[in-house]
Image (cartoon, rainbow, N blue to C red):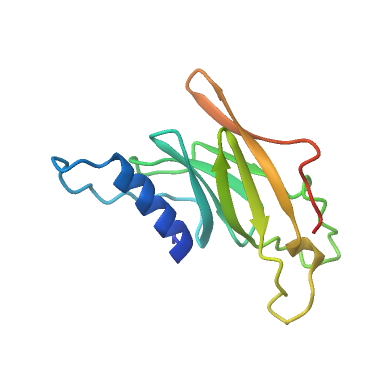
Length: 148
C-alpha cells in the first residue's frame, strides 16, 4: 500500500522538505512509504522523521522521511480515544500541530458519510514524542482527551 497524502498533509511534508533543502541540493529520489493510505495529518519529528495519521483508522505512525518502507513505529490509539464500538468507529483525524515535543491531533468534528452526527469524530488529544537512543515513539498525554 502506497502512502497517499491529502492536500494538507502534502503541504506540511513539502514545507518540511523545503526547510531542509539548500540551493546546492539536487532533486530528491522518489520515496514510497508503505502500510497506509489516505494520510490526513502529518508533523515533522526532528529532521529525518515524520508522524502521520490516516483518516480511516486511529493508528499514528512514524516514518523515516528519506527512506522508503514501512513505518518504524505505529500505535493504535482507538482505546485511548474512548470510542463506543456501537458508534461509527472512524475517528476521522484530520489535523495535527507540533509544539515542542507535543503533537496535538484533532478529528474532523463533521458528520459521517451518511450525514449523521458521530461522537467518535469529536476528539482533541495530544501525544508526546519519546526518544530512547535510536528508537522513537508516541505516548498519550494523560488528561489531554477532550470530547468536544
